[in-house]
Image (tube, rainbow, N blue to C red; front, top):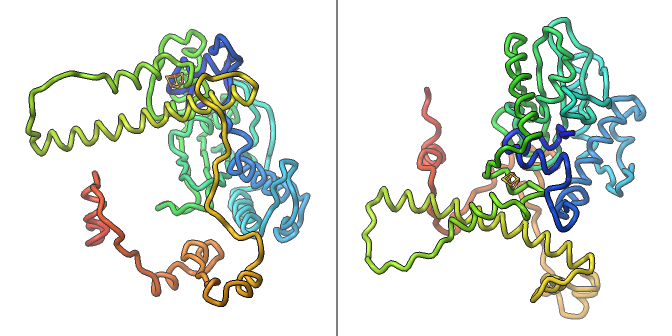
Length: 366
Ligand code: SF4
């Protein structure tokens, strides 16, 4: 069965879906999930934010401030910022009506099964709504969010209803604000459902692989021949002695190509490194490689007062909080803008002249 939470992979690459559903893609070792996935700080923090929102939605906690200091089973503790953001999310969800479900199992066509741990509000006669709180910093869009599409189509249960898929992401700046919505009119729902069913069905046959940006998050990347081959073919060596003077267009094209290759190779290296480290940690030998601790910069093991006493007042400096930290604590962006600037610290080549022009001269009115 395919998981909706992996839909960003299997909707694009049938081979990824097949590997994830069967776990048999890796032939010599069990399929490994790169260590970044479930126990990273970001993942634990996100799980904790979901849990805090659910406590509020279900009325198990009355006031947002009662959440502060509560600890999720994964060890992450709710702080004031998280309590504030989850309260805003709950208010947003409730503005559409009473909450109908916070957790239920969904299944589509015997191909997709998962837990609807997003939230839906009681359906209106015209619309079924599904909500998801995203707590990370990388902006997430609602439109073409395949996991949400799975949940929305399952929640609609074949009824002739519009579907609204809501992403609420309070932390990163987004031009549309913290809430984004993908609205699918009832007339378009059958087409999207069929598209999703076909994408899932293709994973059964694993008829082909599709490489691209999504490979970075694919647990099967290390053993995937398509991924390795794409990566290696970008680095083929040519022994050629003629010189060549680039035209401006050729320079631009080559820069774009090199950026892609750099990203491809870097993503593959991360996948292979994660696999090698996981094997070494399980006691396997990878010739020529060991795991050694990475050391950070030196830091004092005594407090600032002790350092001041030992080395004099010049050893301790007062440090200003960053504008971003103050904004996160709720200080007005406009106020901070009055006393901040963005200094130029160097120059870089940009492949987005329009964005640069907008930064310099403001957006053209359309
Ligand atoms: S690494 Fe990329 S091409 Fe290979 S299975 Fe995963 S998503 Fe598909």
